[in-house]
Image (cartoon, rainbow, N blue to C red; front, side):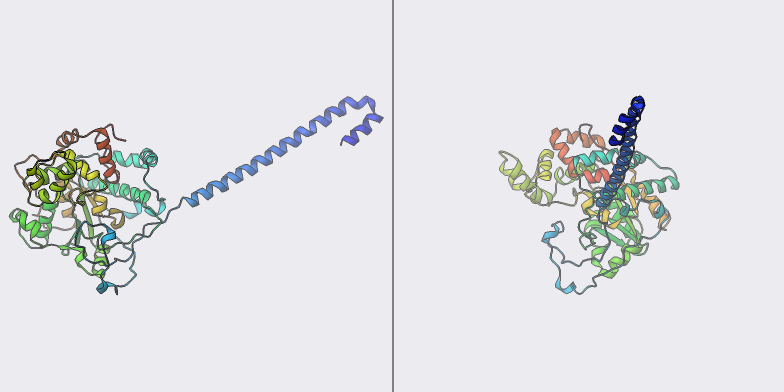
Length: 431
C-alpha cells in the first residue's frame, strides 16, 4: 500500500491529498476489527476459567456405607482413635445399601435441598460470614424463631421441612469430602430403639431426654403411664435397647425404615442447665470425677476441702475446663455438642424437635407415628423439681461472669449447633 501511494504521488500530484486521507482511514478499520477479535477471545478464556473453577470446587459427597463393628469402648466418650475393632466381628459384610429414608407426612424429599448439589468447605471466619449472608440461609434463620408457638399440623410440617433443609445445607457446606464417612457403632450409640412404633430417638441430655425415655417405655408396653416411672428406673433400669446393641443387619434395617428423631436445646442454655444440675447440686459422681481435677487445675489457693470433695466448682472454672485443649478430665455427654452426640450429618434425622416447643412438637410426633391417643408428653421436671428451670435470663446471668473472649470461644465451641439448628447468637458482641 505504501509503494502504491508513492507511485500515485509521482504520477498524480493533484490527487495526493485525497489519497492520503484514504490511507489514514484504513488502519482505523483494521485496528477496530483486531480489537473485536481480541475481545471475543478474552470472553471465551474467561468462560473456560469459570467452568474450571466450578469443577474444582465440587467436593466429594457424604455417603452412607456399612456399619463398622468396633469393640465396646471402656469409656463411652473416648475419641475414635482409642477404639479398636473386635476380631470376632471382622467377618461382617463389607457393603450395604445406601440408607433410604421412609416417607413420612412431614417429609417431602423432592422439596428438600440435596447435599450432593452443594460443595464441601471448611469452617473459617470469612466463610462463616459469607455463609450467614447468603440468601437461603438468611431465609432459614428467619423462618423458625426460638420459642414460636405453632398451631396447626401444616405449620409444624413446614417447620420440619425448614429445619431439615437448613441442616442438610449446613452439613453439605461443612462436611469434608476428602474422606468417605461411614456409620459406625459409635455414631448410633446414643440412639434408643422402640420397635413397635418403629422409632429411633437420639438422646440429648438436658433437652427433655428423661421424659422421652419415659415415653419410649410406655410405647414399648413397660408401663401404662409416664407418671408412674421413677427417675432411677429411667436412667438405671436398662429397660430400653440402644441401636448399637443390634447386629449390623439390624442397625442398617432400622436406619432405613424407622423414624429417626432428634430433640435439642439452645446450646448455652443447655450448658448452663448441665452445670447447675451436676455442680451446684449434690452429686456423688460429677463432684469427685470432674470437680476435683477442675478445681485442682484452675483454682489458685484451693482449700483442702475443695480438693478432696470437688464441690463448689464455679461456672468460670467450668468454662476454662470446657475450652481447654488439654482438659484434666474428658468430655461428657451433658455438654457435648449435638453434632458429636447424634451425628446429624450422617444419620439425616426425619424429625428435628426443639426443647423450646417441646410438648407441642413431641405430641405432634406421637400422633404422627400412631401412638396411643391417651399418651402425651409429660411436662414435669425430672431432677430437682423445686429448682427454677434454666431459662434464657438465667443463662445470661451465668455468662455475664465471663469476659468477651471466653464467651466468644464458648460460642465457637457450639458454633455448628447454633448454625445447623437455627439458633441466633446469644450475645450481640459475638461474631
